[in-house]
Amino acid sequence: MDRRRFLGAVGVGAGLLMTEGVAEARAEVRVYLGTYTTWAGGGPGLGLASYDAATGRLRSTGVVAGVPNPSFVVTAGKRVYAVNEQSKGTVTALEVGANGVPKVINTQSTGGADPCHLVLHKGHVLAANYSSGSVSVHPVRSDGGLGARTDLVRHKGSGPDPDRQEGPHAHQVLADRAGEYVLAVDLGADAVFSYRLEQGRLTRVGTATLHPGAGPRHLAFHPNGRYAYIANELDSTVVVASYAGGVLTPGQKLGTLPPGAPTTPRNYPAEVVVSADGRFAYLSNRGHDSVAVFAVERDGAALRLLEATPVGGEFPRHIALDPTGKLLFAANQNSNTVTTFAVDQATGRLKHTSTFPAPIPVCVAL
Image (cartoon, rainbow, N blue to C red; front, side, top):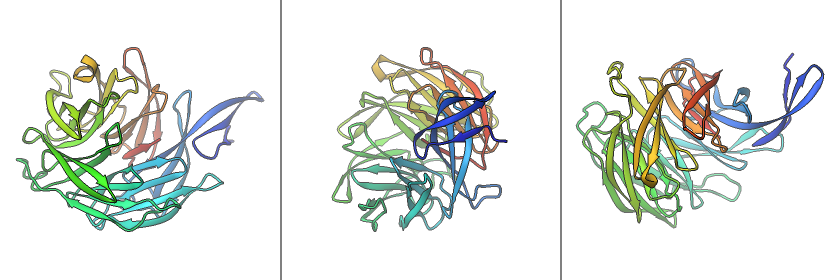
């Protein structure tokens, strides 16, 4: 018999842990798990789970069928938005009902191919279309659904890697800490493009050019908003960039692996996140299969590699810190697992605490 019974509907709820007939209150938190539904061994839709707020241990709570390839997901209260990473790219809006079960509101075309990231910004959902190197804009309706696309900007540029940089490949779109500008990280163009969103349309305000062959994938801002850390997928580096007025200026570059780390299999950095207090940054290494832990120095202006903690799985595509900063989750795409780590908030170091089976997990959305 299942000894845990989840009583909460959305977000943090009350759980009941039965031990020798004594009920102990436990808080559980809703999690959405992104996957690829069209891949062999993938999930049947958007995965639903919850975790014990004290231990980080995950458990499955169901799935929302009919959401194809939800490889990246964002939440806003009872509303959930997912990309549908396919050749005719779409984005899906969902709303969590009174019974705690999300239901699809509607789906809209992004006008691009293989959207892999999205963000909510000023009442709009913006999506990064990887294969077509573009960013789409959709207004959010009053019911949480998505309106027709109001803009589609196409990047230009290429890099020296003939297999991955023959043209632009938008890999992430996010807002800055002040919510004033939107930044689009483009792996193919070795660049980060900055925009201002006004009346549903994007206007370019700046371009940050990375070193050739970097393959910038994702970035994360320091809490002070003056610095960002750019994870470069193609050469296993992270770049510290200063930031002002919508424009990034690349600075310090350092490797994401410890000295002497093996060069095979090839390593591909993926996600980068920063602790809420701004003291530590974490980066997932796919290939080396680790989470690099960095100390943040000089009020955000520099990073120093502390260690690369084994992730306990294979090909960690996405990592996420929980709101307390005490837990870190890693979605290990090739081992079909999500691993949980306890975060030592004094030292920044990670300790593996549990492993959860999931079909091709590529995103953990809290």
